[in-house]
Image (cartoon, rainbow, N blue to C red; front, top):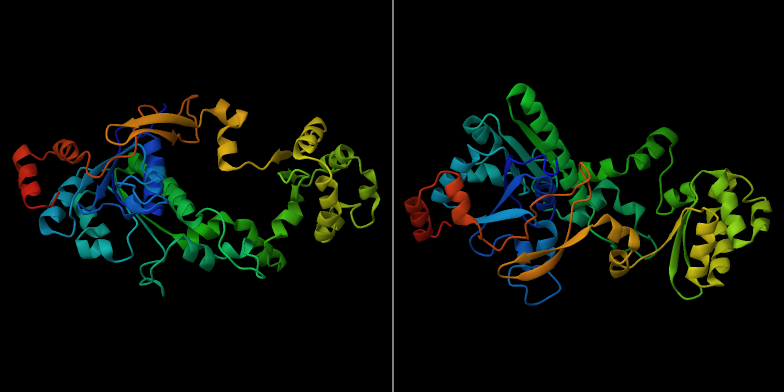
Length: 395
């Protein structure tokens, strides 16, 4: 049960984040995900990172490509295309995140692969739809965030800049994975594969349904602090400069508990803050009222007080602090993997536990082309054929 997708073979023609993230989730669930890469350099993310000497194994690449196998195959060359089609006939899933039209130019469009393998689930992730007005435009994460409206909920219009992790990339991969799983389940009933298409724009919009219903149902255009005001969530700097997060939500008992914890019941008597709707309407004033209270004492003091009064709150961790958090250690989110060439690396495990377990037989991120011969043999290529492909520099 820890690897429910064991036996499912996925050919991933992905690079950077969106496609590889979808493949990562399938791999974490036990699928045999085969990353098909260019012989010269492979996935561009291999050389993308904060270190100048990443040797094709950057931390960015490793983040999105654990539990996969890697083969090199020049799919732009006729013999490479023949080899890929041969593999696609035996695969369960083909996953790609090229710009619209690239797969068709390579001869791997859905119609062609479906004719060769009617049971195939064919998944495409792109910035924009192939037949839409922006089909020819390039797209990365910031483009998906911006066009979908997602970025407007994070950016301060007085000091606009992009902040935080990529979101459109990951949610596109998550939507794609979810749809692939549904298509595989449907295939069990019908025997037929399906085409799955996800764009960064629609995946990003699907992440924030409340922002759209706020507008369509109530005519309200949400701003960066709108959600925080409605849910009465805060972040405060304490006397030691450390930050604390609080999320009161709509429960009156948590609001009262917060006032008790900070010893300021008088704030609740202020006409602006007496009722929940008043607190929402006067959110900025409430922030300014509470800010000096938390600035007066160190974070540990407030964390203990809030916990003692059952207030939903937590210290704001840095990434190293999060890894050292007792709850994270209890969950076992990290473990050590060893690669023959690149040594030991700390790796994240999948978030979901099935039957109380995470993924079984975890693999380190692959070196470029590490599994080429092994995988080709698995798909029925004879040693002599593999040698010919190598001689032709197709693999």
